[in-house]
Structures are given as C-alpha cells and as structure tokens.
Image 1 (cartoon, rainbow, N blue to C red):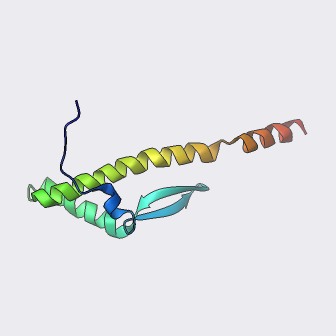
Image 2: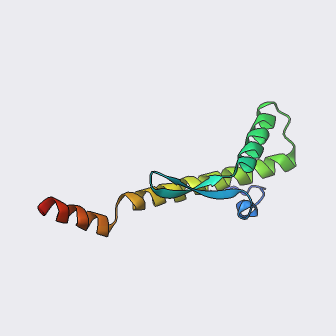
Length: 96
C-alpha cells in the first residue's frame, strides 16, 4: 500500500540543483554544491529534532530526487560499460 506524503516536487530543483559530471567516462547526475549543502543542513536539523514541517517536505523532495539519481546513474553506468559496438569491437580485436 502506498502512503501519500507531502513533499516539494523533485522537479523543483531540475533547473538549479542538478549537474552532469563525467565519472569513469560516463555522464552521471549529481547535486550542485548548493543543493548538497542544503540537504546536509536539513539532515542536521532532523537529527537535532529541529526540523519544521516545511523543511521536512523539502528534505523529502530532495531525498526522492536522490533516489531517482541513484537509479538513473546506475542505468547510465551500465550502458556506458557495455554497448553492441564496443562488444563487437572487442571480439574483432581479439580475433584480429
């Protein structure tokens, strides 16, 4: 059963909280330093028991975006490590 949750929509940060970075030859999604700092600040508030309902909604949205990035980045990394062309080239070079 899905439980509805109040949160800031992850798409809120698309234009200003996300960057693409090349890691091991693959582009991956990452938070900007500003969004990462905000996430850390909100987590600190939560740990101290000082988080407001608005801050919790913001943290929930950022956390959801992090989960989306984790999935998308795993797909991007998998695709960057294997492709039909690189596989065919490897076989050609091994036989050649």
